[in-house]
Image 1: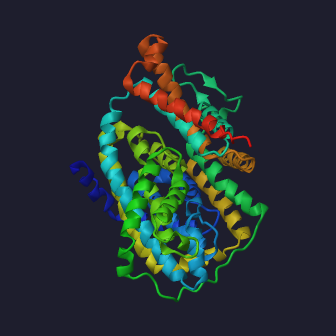
Image 2: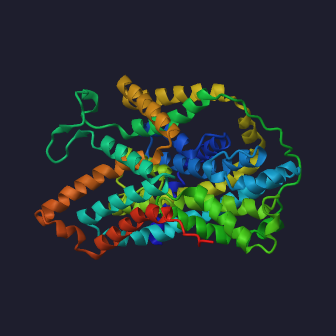
Image 3: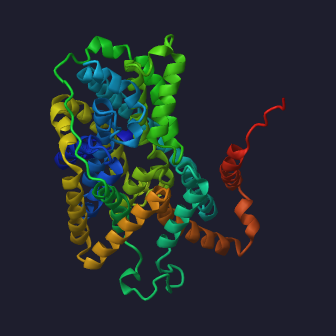
Length: 492
């Protein structure tokens, strides 16, 4: 715990505090606009992190992550449109409350519940991640190979409705990650004569293209102007009423933390599962779906409790748990920080400072949400026909400013068009990013393992950790087969 406390002074530096405030406000704004997500906001920010110090960049991302989760509840409550995928369950009771003239009350429940979930998640990150590093120190190249394979299979299967498409996306990412120079032989591979990518594909360029451009292209394909006319003059949430949600927050927080640690599960699953559990535990479940405030509290607490907990495997093992964690991992790599056990010993001030930033931005979100609710609601009125070109311009300027190469701008746009086509065809984008990060990790660990064992393949299943990981991978691969088996109905 002393090591965790050592990061607090670094998180309280002036530039860190300003970055957290700006990131939290931007996250709420982005989340309040349907179709825009924390992933998009971070993808827009990523090229600019080259010039930032590590804690400034990570503090801004922490604010975006926490803020956007609450921001997604604003259109979910006012318009029945989830601002982020995680806010789907919030629409079930949030919109009926708004229709009943209690929009302000519903927004306050969402805000306080989001804050509670973010606090629970940040505390889980502080408590669970450091001990996990002790276990990670027992990992060698062979164990890291299986960790990379586990990350690829679990995320690509769990994120995709169609497992085959999820694995296909992951393999596309692996191919992109292998472009450039072979680190062991120095030979170029998969370059196809394009000298600009001889050193590999820039991670920031790929992330910006895949996550920021497709939503903009989707807006251009079907531009429409949304607006909100909800009444925000009614009574809000009172302190004594907020205390009555403590049991809901406890249940939903635990569910959110567990879902967050699971690779690829995501806040949308956490919100839906927590909503279902709250409805099951209620004495009067018939009220759910008709404006029960417990439904909002359960959904918003759970999808925020997923935030920091999804970073536990990222920081401790170097395996991103979801697309947002992958972007944060990309920002760390850009800063020269390698997530994993060594990060805690070599850059303790950064990693523990970042944990405190995840906690502090939760309180900033509460303050900004109370002060700026009407301002954030006005963001719903921006026409998509204006918003999409703004995103394209910011992406292009940010990419060019970070690399000073027009070729990277074209490459970023190419990734964007590819991501748009793939997403329209039902292929998930997140496994591509994870494949690009984990693919090279798996390759290098595999080759190092062969060198250490002098080519003995049995060495890859010789340690207890390796065996456990192999069993977990086989179990995940078997899940789609088990889902396809339908129970036989008795004849007659």
